[in-house]
Image (cartoon, rainbow, N blue to C red; front, side, top):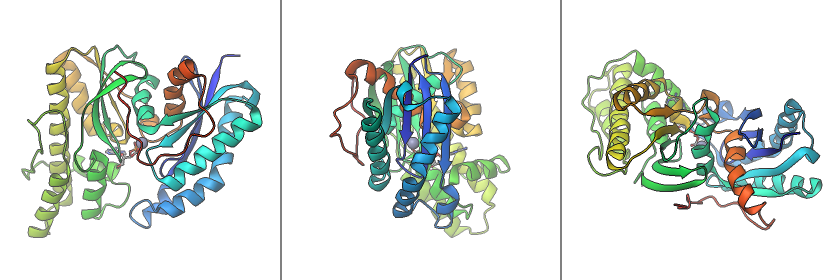
Length: 333
Ligand code: KG4
Ligand code: ZN
């Protein structure tokens, strides 16, 4: 049988498990979302999130293994997100993965959630050509990285304040569109027009990002003109975000020779962004790789995919590694 890794992800409000082969074929991927429960509170409640992970983690792992038709003895290793994320949530996944590793006599690999997102682009249909310019736009992070080969990367720029997903979620709250905000703001934006000239923060200022000023500009507009059409506010906000993201990608492409571009993280599910990326790809004659829609937001297939190159080098981690809520993306190139 082909070698497979079991991935486990519990860093925020999704309990996820997946089975992925060495060739990065996703044999199964199960995601149990707590979104509905947190929506009532307008955002993730950490204590509730960890309690649900406790009850969900083993059933979700069993489902992923049953769907893939594999048992504990068939695994090459167990990969688990060790950070960054909510500490209580991370601890549940790490404890479960270690317990199963001990029970089945298998190695365990601690994975950085951000490395997982970077690896998710390899799970799409397009073959990534290296060096690849990766834009990571999730709820917790926004950054640009150069990936020289799988697992070898350098951060080129990141956000100074809010991430793109966070800005989407905050604007959704201001517009009363509920949680999570990304899909709701996108939907409203499609029905509106870009009539408000919102700022494009740091658009010509290096490869870093800043989105808190844009969110404040939206709040100010709504305070001054409470009768503004929400669809137009959403469209104007999304247009500003898209301009910044596309212009940062263009700047990075001007600076260095990349053979492909990949966009990953929850915001990569945005149809508006996907449309702009298709235009960029055409304009620049460069391939833009995207994870399948279901693997753009948090999942465990990306954790298993990121674990493969680590496992090949180390054979697994010592069992005393801990969960680290503030884990940074290590520079490896
Ligand atoms: O990667 P992810 O699932 O979780 C983190 O690691 O943070 O990203 C979640 C973020 C949320 O902020 C959500 O609003 C945003 O991704 N998102 C979207 C869309 N779907 C999810 N943003 C824009 N358009 C979407 N369709
Ligand atoms: Zn994530």
